[in-house]
Length: 171
Image 1 (cartoon, one colour):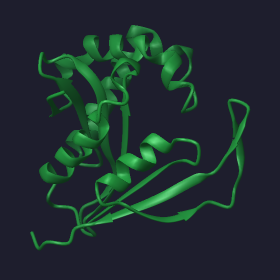
Image 2 (cartoon, one colour; image 1 turned 90 degrees about the vertical axis):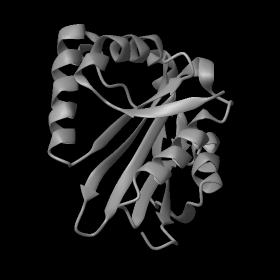
Image 3 (cartoon, helix red, strand yellow; image 1 turned 180 degrees about the vertical axis):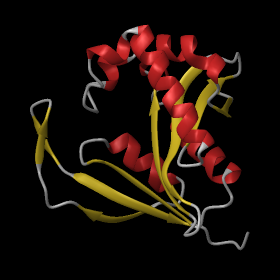
Image 4 (cartoon, helix red, strand yellow; image 1 turned 135 degrees about the horizontal axis):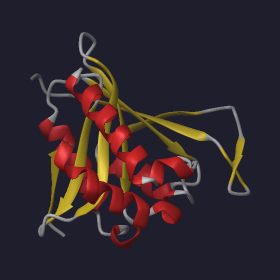
């Protein structure tokens, strides 16, 4: 599937709300719930505005992953940006109907090509999220550790797996 990544905009609120609402149960199998209020459109719109402000302040960069028809199929973000050190953290999610198609891996590849100003990008996922681990590894991220802290999520004991990507070419 041909995809593109596009910076989050104010005009994306309604479509993104639908995407998040449609995929809520699927996402909550892998990450904690964002809470009931998040899915009420007025709250969602307020939080959407907060993300845009955070993006304008250069603390984060939020991207939507879109298919060839322009539909949202996922999200990929850089957060905790430290521009002087050229470091950020990456996070991504793909909608239920789009998993297993290489979308997250392709989006991460595009993000690394788009965001050339970073020397180091960190990522983390849970020990049971093999797909996210493979996505990072397929894009040159190296596993640097597993947290000692074990926690229970959806009845399963998991730990965080930490990754790091470092730019090898000079930019």
